[in-house]
Length: 388
Ligand SMILES: [Zn+2]
Image (cartoon, rainbow, N blue to C red; front, side):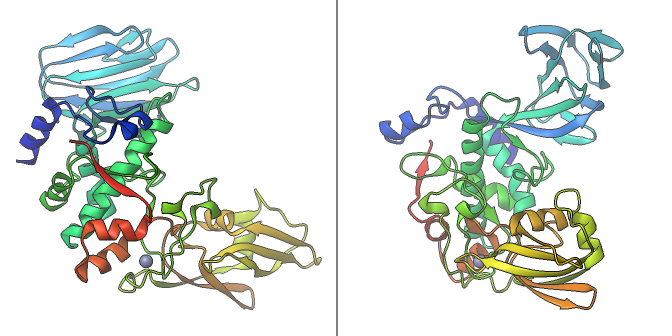
């Protein structure tokens, strides 16, 4: 059923029904074009294996020309070679090709099946980037499965669907001159292809069809995170981004059921020094770490390292977390306890804390809030607009 609905959506031109002013501020959203998202599903590969069920064409993207046509299904590899791309033992002098299947949901890349078509780009170091181009709504369906539990209340899932759609549309603006809009991993939004869908998450996407958040008539990166741990973060603490919907400071009393609300981890000083040393090297041996600055939401902004030669070094907490491992140090909202050679981090929340708190959305929806109320709470000043 979801498949049929999606095909209907593909055939229907997506028209903006929002005000002309909004339309003008979103130049990529042409009234006659289907909104598609280009997802980099594989990067930095020398070779990829594809399976196509049914007839298909291979197109040289730069020349916009069919270079191969097949009436039958096939499995084959695409290999990066000096002269271009080797497909089925034929070398084509091309650095960008597209596999255009006649049937939908019929291309498998390295055993994972995708809706839409597949493009392969070769870069100057002879590495391949595989890009799945598909309509926006199908993309949101493929992301939701990974980003939120389908067992959660419907309004929490709907709120997430609108955030995912907004983020993707914003990325389309930012990346319009690149080969893809979003990556399929945690650097963007985790996208799992066709099999990463459930009927409930698909329903949430259909309910909110075409809805996105705008602030002052413009799209913005509707960031989200697992658990804020009590208060959302100001995006300007992490990026050059200072707008009301991402200004943080929302007191979130809704995510306390999250398993990540409190966390604890420990690491030896020696290991910490090793993890930091490529970026921040100390002359002596690391003997102490202390919090040197916190920001208004209580998160650590900077840390001071000290070695046995009494050298001191201040480093941003954002980088400290990234170098130690963002899944080990789950947030920058932590306290430090030094136990001999070992540092104990006692923290709250998981993620950067900007925008929608996923466990907070869960808590709000359990208390009866609608997805619109959830979005209004976590993205103050933003309005929901429907593309119909
Ligand atoms: Zn929260």
